[in-house]
Image (cartoon, protein in one colour):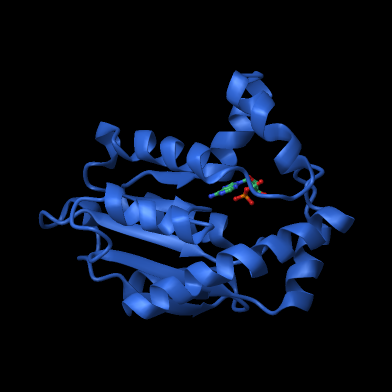
Length: 196
Ligand code: AMP
């Protein structure tokens, strides 16, 4: 499989505002590569639905569209990426969302961020709003919550885009195309052998 070809783990980061299609594309890419998709939003929602102490702590931030504290996210991702199923690589969906998170990822990854592929999914705001309002997932995707999520992205995650631009590793992806076209583009950009 592609993820296991060669000795270098295939590590991919998806950046982009809510509604840009990160989760969908990350899931398909992860399946193709045979590596886990790590969605920090899913992990946090699982804590909330199970009623864990962490879930109780983070719920108020998630409900209003704000970001959860960096130290919580950094520890969660550090633990998850240390699991044996990440040995051949992993795909991050929703992390890093702040510059301190990106810096910590560089420290926790063997070899830093040198071999990491960073895709920035780009979709104009009016289309994002239309997509988010059409979502029926949970109540974090409506009205003021949508606005706050987009604002948080602008204020705290756009600097992460600049961080990776400065590293020369950001690849901008036109997320307005249909799902299959975007996926084909991502696969073509990854420097791995196609899975058998
Ligand atoms: P998502 O499903 O990725 O849109 O995440 C849903 C919510 O989880 C976000 O609005 C944040 O409240 C929280 N969250 C997920 N990932 C992060 C992160 N890397 N840093 C801070 N908060 C996060």
